[in-house]
Each structure stands twice: as C-alpha cells, then as structure tokens.
Length: 437
Ligand code: GLY
Ligand code: MN
Image (cartoon, rainbow, N blue to C red; front, side):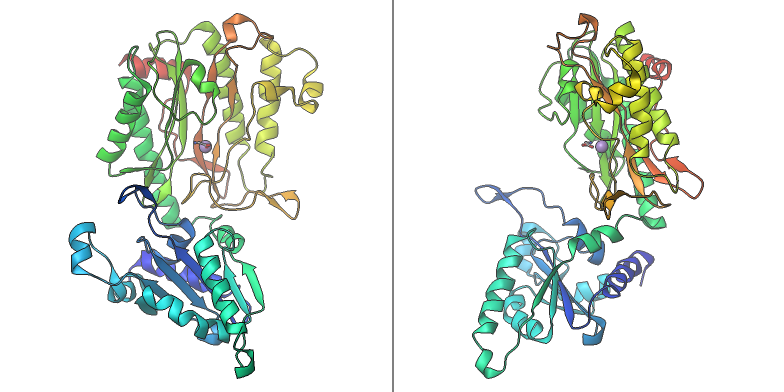
C-alpha cells in the first residue's frame, strides 16, 4: 500500500481509537448539485469524507465500525457502469475501493439503506455529522423509526447520536508532513500566479481579466481548481471584504486587491496582495499599505508554538491603531481606542484562520472557552487589512476608498513559523519593481 493510502488508513484508525464500544460512524458523500436542467456544479468531495477515505466521487457512504465490532471500514459507492462511464467518466467501483483505497469492505450504494438496519441493531451509539447532511440524517431517523416498530420481535436500536464533526475537525488541525508538502506546493503555485497577475494588471482591464490570468497560471502549474472564489477588487471594491463580482474596469490611480489561492491535491492556499493598477503607489496608498504591512510582519513574528490564537490579533491591533492615530484617521489615546474597538471602523475581521482541506479550515479556535495554543503542524493565514469606506466623511478625502489587505500562509514549526507564500513580493519597493519589469 502506498504511503498516501496508508495515511488515510491511519486516520481511520485514529478516529476508531476515539469511539465508544458498540458504535459506528457514518459519513456521506452527497450527490452533485444541479445547476440547471441536467447540468451539475463541479463536484468537490466533502473534506471530512476525503480526509478519512481519499474517495472523491459523489453518492457514497463511509461506515466505520468500532473496534469491538470488528473495526471494518465499509464503503458504499456507485458500482462501475460502462454506460454511465461513457458519459461521465471513470468510477472506482467496489474492487477499486478495496485495492486503491485500502477499504475493508465495499458495496454498491443501493445496498446502504437496505443494510443499515442490521448495522444499527448492533450498536448503542451512532456518530455522524448531524445537521450537516440532511439526507443522511433522514435515512438514519427513518431506519430508527422502523426498528422501533419491531420492539416485540426483540429488535434493539441505538440510543445515542453523537456529532462526529468536531472529532474529525480536531484531527485535521495538526497537518502531517505529507499535508504540509501539498500545502507548500499549493502556495508556490499561487505565488507564481499572483506574480503573473501583478505583471499583467494595467489600467482599463476588467477585474475578471485579472481573475482569468490568475486561474490560467494556476492551471499551467497543475492546479486547476481554486480553493475559493477569487476576490479581485479594484479601488473601493476592496472595502467589500468578500467581493466576488469581479466585473469592474480597473482605474488609473486605484489599488487592486487580489485575494486568490489555488487548491492542489485537495489542499488550499489563500494569499492576498494589494498593488497599484498603474504600478506606482500614491503617497496616501503607501501610508496605508505600509501600516498594514508592519502589522502583518509583526503578526507573523507572533506565530510560534505556545502562542495563544488571539495574540496575533492583539499585536496587529496595537500597530494598526497606533498607525491610524499617527495618520490622523483615529484620534485619542491608543490603549483607550483599542479598548473601545475604534479600529472596527477600518479593520473589521480577525487575524486569519486555519488553512487546510478547506480555505477556512476545520478546528475550534477556543477550547473550553480559552483561545487555543499554537502547536507545530498548524497552518494558518495572517491577514490584516484596512478598509476606508469611500463615503466616510469622518476622514480626510485622501484616504477614502482605499482598501488594503496583505495575507500569507504560515505553518507553525518547532522554532516559530514558516511562511509558505514567502516567495511573493510584499514591500512597496519590491511590488513597484516587480510591476515595472
Ligand atoms: N480568502 C478569503 C477569506 O479568507 O475569507
Ligand atoms: Mn484568508
């Protein structure tokens, strides 16, 4: 069995070790979502399903029995069908699930509902991501109802329904060497695409043309999928935090905020750079940019084992608020302004998020009410920003409509951290030099 497949198997073993006796886990890969007519949206496997199985096709159920019941991993999936495969392409089928993915038993998906009563009768506890896949919830509840009707025949049913999502999410927080290698590659590809997009940008292009250039360069480097909808925001559009229309023309004198990252081997990258459409920052843009950059560099320096999650935000808030006072955008004492959350006028999001199979990756940020401690193998983004509304009459006109975010992908290491996206230009001088080339 190759190394990657043994990693999936190892994860199933690790999950099994956390199960109660007489229990089973159910995960579902949903059917594709209809876009219109018989045309479906591109399918992307559920991250937890993929994390435990490596299986990427739609319409499947993964059932894992607790160790005392045998501990088998059982996959119900679409059987191979030459007619369907003629239209929609290769399917792994049951033999493939066993030989390629190291699954213990494999059956056709049509057998799942038929066989579920036998499995449920054996167990006390059922683990599933309750509430996430209504279709799975419904099948289990209908089966449960039918089992109860058979009480006089001595039939039993599970009595405990446990949400497995947080357990799997928690497993995903610390990345393996193999996962970090994939994320390093994802970041490298996105860095190349950002570099290309930066040089391609000029006055008169549309935001979607820069988007196309970015995606094209990701695909040229073997990453066809984006980890999320790219945010390509010229001028004041950058003040819309998750702007994705990407339809406007780029104007001379404006900044362009490009928040985009490819997915590679199912792992996300998430990088933001903000740069001048015409290749030169104005004085006002430079002041805001350098303030965000100072905060981001200090935020990255705060990422190390033992640091609390919110320390990065605290470090960045101090720098941003001090700088906003110096520039005259906020008035008053820095400590008081931080306590009053005055920064919310210009900086309204957190310091970043976990990154992995999902762009906003799995895992709790607080554990038993306390911010979690950073540990080697965690991957996160550090992404401060300042967004000055185009209509904000409380600030001098020179600042209005400037939106800047700078975002890198960072792995916590034994000593501190490694910036996976470090190859991408970031200072004013480096960006201007890169765009002039
Ligand atoms: N890249 C988008 C976000 O982090 O929300
Ligand atoms: Mn992000």
